[in-house]
Length: 576
Image (cartoon, rainbow, N blue to C red; front, side):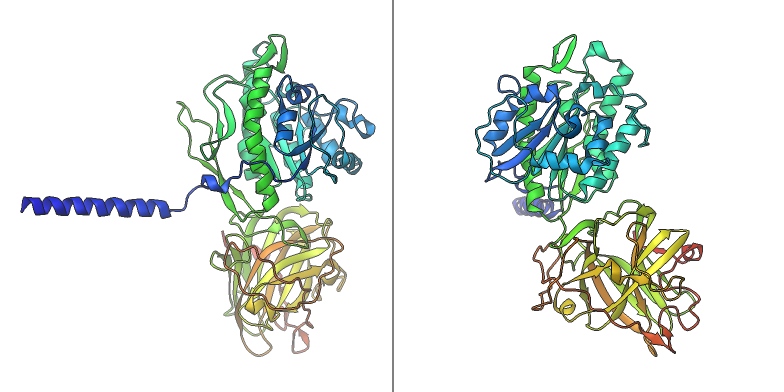
């Protein structure tokens, strides 16, 4: 009897362990090692490194060996140095100079030179032949004087002119993203500035440098809700502060390890020279190359949304904090640039996410929220359920806290799936401010292709016309003063209008794009698919009418279909 019970106990324990292991393996978690690709590109890739003397030593064969290692990893390397480029822009590589390179009035001229540079301006072995074309990867780095940073470690981003402070440095890097998002065809990699030596800084200044570089590496892109994989950071600073400090790919993980050591250079050339010595630069080369390869493949393949874990900074006492998960999202589909929302679960910057409005005086119902089972690409789409009575209205919209400039695009682009063809709705855009919105409307209907799959819709700016219930009727939309976008649904002339649509990959149209007519229907794809349907133009319809007036807010039109102003706030329904 005891043996039987013992056998049953062993069997029960074995089954329990098997079940527990199965559950553990099935649980969603951080990306596993196979989701990274630390291997070199298969074909030669053109790369340019913007630097001064520290970068020159890092590249040199007899010092850091970076140039040679890049070539061995299939990168054709060019560089800039003092005296380089139009207006000798190469002289200016401090943090406060980066706006001149990327955002200033002459930045287009400077960047054209950067993208087309193919020469060496430092000494390093370059054995690969020039593969032709522009530089695809841009590395840029400031030198160690930029670790002499004023302010306090927790200062928030704030424009302070040319001051080298924690606040101003954060502001500058945030502003650079406004350019980087317009060039998803380039990979921009920030190399943090190296540390100062003990003899050349104070503990307070060194703590500022540590805090700023931690922010740049771990928090910058996350806090900005930056949606593209074309920007990355390598923490050169941290690597040089202690032998146990790392930013590397190790055991299937990207590690950003900061021990309890100091915030100054462990590898100075000598006590009076803060240039990193050969040992420090060689350590940086060894850790940088696998990360560069991961950054490159992540950007080039445009993989679906996934998580890339980073080992967090140790908490007080030296124990690591929970792993920081950083979302990586796909680049825009063909024909689109400038992502507005991929519906990956992170509200677009400067917004509260998607919100729905409806006429509370009627029995209308509206709802818009992420749907994780039906998506054109990535983890989710925006599902809009509408049940609008005759003479009423409802909208699902995205509203910005500050005015946006969308002149880099030619209109709005999105993928549409619908439960039925022929459903009328409007694409709306807003100019002005949240206190005084101007509404621009484009009416269309769901095409046949959107029922069997995902139809790619393009709405040029000149098709978005000022709403008839506002002044300056039929004037075209001004994309330099964007306050928001929405999708609107009206009740039918004599009945309710009920249904569901899904929207995904909302972007700006690439200037000059002419969408071909549809050739075939596209099968519906599950969430995470990357197959692209035939591009097609939007299908306009005449403005629906009720008793001779646009079917917008009922006969009286007391409120516009796009709910605006302070009155809207009391009826807002948030979806996040």
